[in-house]
Length: 291
DNA sequence: AACCTCAACAACCGCCGCTTG
DNA sequence: CCAAGCGGCGGTTGTTGAGGT
Image (tube, rainbow, N blue to C red; front, side):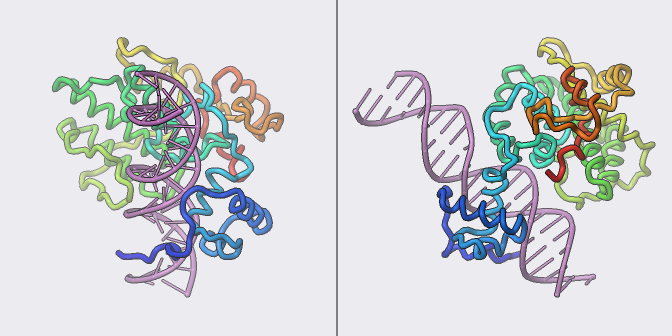
């Protein structure tokens, strides 16, 4: 359906922002706060469209942006989160304080993709490259993709209760239960909830927490020549070792708000220093949301 | 010094979901 | 209930600067 452009294209600047424009935007938001992007440009005396202002603020001018190089820890986090969420850059950015979705997206495309390929890992499936060479391999690849989709949907469901992710989960469970149905599964996770659920009755549901815990452990890098452990084994191992670890992803370890203690207590910070922080990032969200 | 290539990243575009009248 | 508006998101493009020839 046709929609009018968000702003008068003829009367707006495009391209790089000038210092003066930045100052105007910063001053306005400092005085009035964020929001109402459509009317902001006019009110702030800017010849920009609201979207452009929002983007500039969120990606560049916001005071809590970290900027600077990504650390190794952040690299590994991004990889893990991408394995979980797929190209949901905003979700990933939401768990990396001080980083924006645009920044992470760019970093993924320019650095991490290459890094994973160098490791022999497909950046999309997070599985060894070339696993689909043979027919059995193809089946294996489909299995990997399906598992990745399940983790993805489970994670989305965990973060967005109330949406129809449960239906998608049920759908994926149904698919995985019938091998011949594997070939029917689409490559892409549906973006909207328009995909109808399968007519067959839903199989027993898997507990979300189990699935999530499995997927988010920072497993040591495995060289490509060693076949990846099946997800369930990795999950079982993670659960055995860390079943009781409710570690907050307290981001002090990432340099975020240095010296500020997380609401979840000191145990989180010490665990973070020991490299366990990524296991329970779910608990971390409240620690920096709404900064 | 001039030119070319490529990486990095800022910004734009178009679509989608939610909200509102 | 429906259509329009708005904010937000992800994909893509454009620009710039560094490094190589």
